[in-house]
Image (cartoon, rainbow, N blue to C red; front, side, top):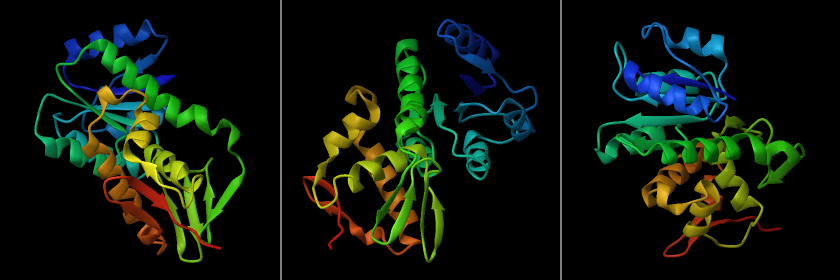
Length: 226
């Protein structure tokens, strides 16, 4: 799989690139940080890794730009430790966040988990799903009803799928975290909250966000009554 690594520290870029090559990943970099989208279009990556602090524009800017064109999985890297950086990255549609310095095994685990969620689980899900009058297309990551169509990120779709396939049943937060990230050591509880809030906000555009209910102290439930 191809990874676009948007990182201006060339020493770190080369180290990550060399290590990922050992796992059979093809890594491309950015020759011109004022023209990241041109390289993105040329590479057509399966995963994007973005540093927050970059020349010209920061990583948040490029995440917005990529998200306006694609639902490709995005993983943020940052040497900053302020919690708002993680919140901002999740709100912009990133799939995960890792703080520098990091152990390389953790980075590989996160990359593998993101790619597995993004590409493996959807291979047998070509059929459409209906819920609360909306049509969910797992392959296209879209939800549609008479009010329009919204696009979901891979994390949002994964969470949504867990809920609607167990509709009218409570899905606990710990269960969602475990299914999403495979290993709870690599995720904060706040990350799930951000993803849930973003999912509800999108569903509100179709006036069905209120059907995702929070069960205080337990988890979430997708409500649909016959």
